[in-house]
Structure formats: C-alpha cells, structure tokens
Amino acid sequence: MKKLISFIFIGCQTIAISFAQNATETATATTDQQNTTTETTNTKAFHDLRTGSFLQIGGGVGHGALNYNLPNGTQKWMMPAATVELRYSFFFLPYMGVGIGAGISTYGSTAYLDSIRTFVWNDVTDSEGDHYNHHTTANNWVEKQISHMVEIPLAIQFHHNFGGKVGFFAALGFKIGIPVYNTYQVLDGSLTHSGYYPQWDLWLQNLPGRFYTETNENQNGKFDLKLSYSAFAELGILFQLGKRTDLLLGLYGDYGFNDLTPTTQNERTSLGFKNQNYTFMNEYQGLIGTNEVEKINTFNYGVKVGIQVYIGRDKKKAQKGEDIVYVHDTITLRDTITLRDTVTNIKIQYIEKQKEQRNHLDAMLQTAVIWFDFDKYEPKIEPADLLDRIASILVANPEMKISVNGHTCSIGNDKYNEKLSKKRADVIAKMLKDKGVHQEQISVKSYASYQPFRYNAKEHQRSKDRRVEIIPLNEKGEMCDSLGNVIPEPIRYTKFLGKEKVNEGDRLAQFARKWYGEQAFWVYIYEANIDKIPNPNKLEENIIIKIPKLDETLVDPKNPECIEKANAIKAKYLQ
Image (cartoon, rainbow, N blue to C red; front, top):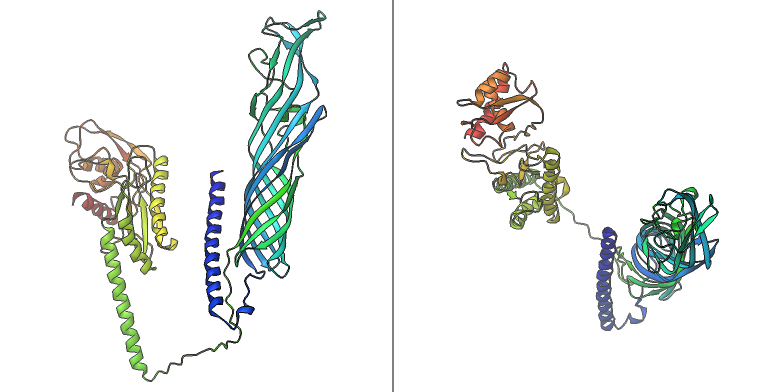
C-alpha cells in the first residue's frame, strides 16, 4: 500500500511540474504573439494529437457493489463509492495506445435478511454432556460489508480531436483487483438462542447463560475475499487546457466475472458468534463467510474526472517561410606529420591527466572509510563531502572504477552479518549513483566480519569493524592499493579442524607447526581468531582458539609460494 501511495504521489508531482511547464510555454507563446504582427492569425493555441507517453490521474464517484445472491433476503448496493487511479499510457498512433496503472477502489453492499431466519447446529453437547440441537434465530438482521481493493488496469486507449480544443476519449481493458481491507458491521438485529433435546422431546428457551437473546448491533470484524478479475470501459469528453495538459470528464464501469467467495460451499457456516457458551460455532466473518451468500463478484460504475499530461518530447518544426540551410565544414590536411605530432601530444597530455586524476583518487581513497553504529546501515556521520569529491573524479573519468566494500564486527552470526554488510555497501553505492556516478563504475561487495579493520598491539576495537571502505579497481577489475599492488580477497573462515586451549608460553607459530607443518601459517590462525587475540605476539592464557580448515594449496609446507604468501600477510600485521 505504501508503494502504491508513493507511485501516485510521484505521478502528482510529475503533473504539477508539467502544469508549470505548460504555464511557462503559454506565457512565452503569448509574448511571442504580442511581438509578432504578421503571423498572429496563423498561431495555434492548442496541440494536435500526437504519439508518445502520457500520464493520467483521475478519480470517480458512483455505485461500487459487492454483488452476490442472497436467497433469504435482499441486497442494496453501496452509494457513493469512490475510485482513484494513476495510469501511464503510450500512444503508438496519434489516436490509439496502451496503458497500465494502479489505483484504489471501494466496493460495498448492505444485506437485509428476512425478518426471522433460523439456523440449526445438530447434535451438539451442553455443559452437562447432554446432546441437543441448537437453534439460532436472526431477527431483522441488517449487515454492511465494505472492501477496499488495489487495482491494476491494463487498457487499450483511444482519443480523437474534433478539430478544436474539444475531443473524446475511450478505453477498454482488463483489471486485477487485490482485496487489502475488508470489513463488516452489523447495523441492526439480534440472535435468539434455544435448544431442542430430541431424546426427551423438550424445548428450552430463555435460560440465562445458555439460551437467551443477544443484541449484535454495531458488532464488526473482517472477512476474506479472493482476487477479482474484471473487464472495464471508459468513455468521455476531452478538453485541452494547454499544450501538454487535457481535462477528462466521462463515465466508467467495470464488471467482475469471477467468484470472490473465499471458501467452498461445504466449508461455509451458519450465522452465529463463537463465544464461551457456544464453542461449537465458528469465528464469524460476516455474511460473506456463511452459507447465506452465494457467488460474490464486483460491479462498479459512475462519473470520472481526471487530468492527462503529455510527458514525451515535442518535435520541433521549422517555421513556415524559413529555408533550412545545411552547412558542411571542410578540413584540409596540408601537413600529415604535423597533424600526427599534434594528435600524439594531445594523447600524451590526456594520459598524463588520467594518471594525475587516478593518483588523486587513490590518495583520497586511502582514508575513505565511513563508519556505522552497531546493527545500523545508515552512516554514523553524513559522508556527503567525501562522496562529493570521489564522485566528481569518477564522473569526469568514466573509465575509472571502484569497489564499495561493506563490513561488520564479529558480534552476531555470519548469515546476518553478511546481509548487514551488504546493506551498508548498498547505501553508500546509492549515494554515489545519486551524485552522477554510473552503475558500471561501482562494484558492491560484502565481507561480514571476515576482514577486520587494521589492528595494533594494544586493543581490538569492534567499532572500527563497522564500516564501508571504497577501494580503487585496476583495468582487470581487481582491488589495488595506491602503488597498484593487487589486494587479495579475504579468506572466509567457516570450517575448522579443531580447537586449542592456550597455556602459558604458547605461541601461534607452534600451533601452526602442529596442525599445518609450517610455522609461517600462524597468520591464518590469527585471522580466524582475531576478535580474541589483540596481540599476535602475546596470547592470553586459558582462551580457546579455533584452527581453521584451509585449502591444501594454501597451506602446503613444501610449497615456497604458500610460505611467501603467508609471510606477506604477516608483514601487514607486524608492520
């Protein structure tokens, strides 16, 4: 419902802007006519039919009925009923087009049961365990039902101009109705309860607490309906208000051709309200949910008024009496060598400028960290200034690309943190897009808690893990630092070989030799337990650390490249 309201609000804004444009164009046209003495009589004040996009917003008032069969009573349709709709149309011919939209309509009816109507529940049990037949008599029962539906129309549309500022419009189409809020209210009536015990041929009436008359006036609740499928038609007069805007005034009608009854006939119940005395009754959902009502469909007609705005581009036409002259520039190359030198010099200058811009961006991104509060995905401090500077470089250099990386601290499970880090990165990426950066220049990644912030030998601060970093990408789409070195993807530690309890004097290197056969691989144990180990050179006693399970190609003690890679990671933590 919120999205539908936002859709209608945006449509209203578009129409308001078009009205303003139309007023400006009309004022300009008036000024031009006052300044022109020879062509005043030939100026057209209104527009011809044209192809392109239109936006319509309108509303109507009339009858809106939940139409159904009521064999034991009569039905009255609701009056008035309202409808409001926003529709986008595209006319592929000046007189014919298609449209799709969204709207809200109200349907309702009032049911009048026969003055006395009796319902029976056979073979029920009273509080003493005796079986009997429970009779409920509805007295002068009057009930109102109202349904609010979100509707999606698909239409073939027509319009025609009679040669002036008046024409006609028409539409035929199909509509899907989604019931979103259905309520009933008892306007009048009461229920009288009595019991018949066939084993004794005994009737019991007016017995307090068991057989009595209850007043149900103003009792209300909700009921369910199925989706509605209906055909609709519109016909009316079109008045041109300006160069882009038309007023629509006409009639509308639609008829639903499917049964909206929420349950089958066998699943429906008699009229009665379940309570502590009558637990055998079902929860009452209005007459719609009882076997008193048959075959429900919608029926709607009334008067419609709306505004239609042309949102396409006007084709400019050459003014009458003017000659269009095409001028062709001719370039003569007299000295090919000079031209080549000039082009080469321009290319060198362009490349040097690119490098300068790239260096500027790299230097800026070294400190491009945006912080977040715990479990939040809105930035702690508005990063507008930083993002403005980054966006200005990216917009001026569309070949440059960046990676927006979201991170979380280690609190919470990995699945939740993965989603949270993605939301944080998406928020920053959207801010950059809103500032003009192209979608193709931005790569969004989420790392959850797998890549903590830079650590020192003192204390790990979780607040620094809750961040978004913006990293430059090279020509291959790889993350790189300011020197152009590729930044490897962080390892995600999700599987483990076992656990170790730290005793006095234990070192990460000895655990690495025990489990991997090479002490250089201690960095992987450190990364997998970084939230427990503030200083990799000094382990706290009695903590439990987990030994990550890694790919054999990463921790092969006989492979010098594996050891070299581990030493490169070690340098990052011990620098």
